[in-house]
Image 1: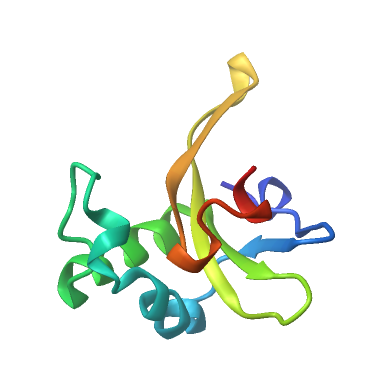
Image 2 (image 1 turned 135 degrees about the vertical axis):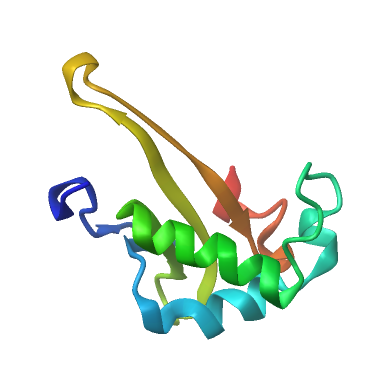
Length: 109
């Protein structure tokens, strides 16, 4: 993927930006909560080695995104573009997680 597929998106609540290698620790601080992954098929992503793989894959894909609180700049989650099909003008977004403190709030309505 090219960087044109990863614009920085800013709104009143969040800022979504291309994932960088130095985002790992802040993202893991969110992702290490086992309850985030409890209902997910890959329910072990809170474990350091498993999350490292997820993070590295997101970074290598060129589609990894870091989600920050717009006011504080705090990392609150991540998502990823994947399955880019230019001929069909189609792309998927997933691999999304959000800090539990943001669940059921204005962040994900």
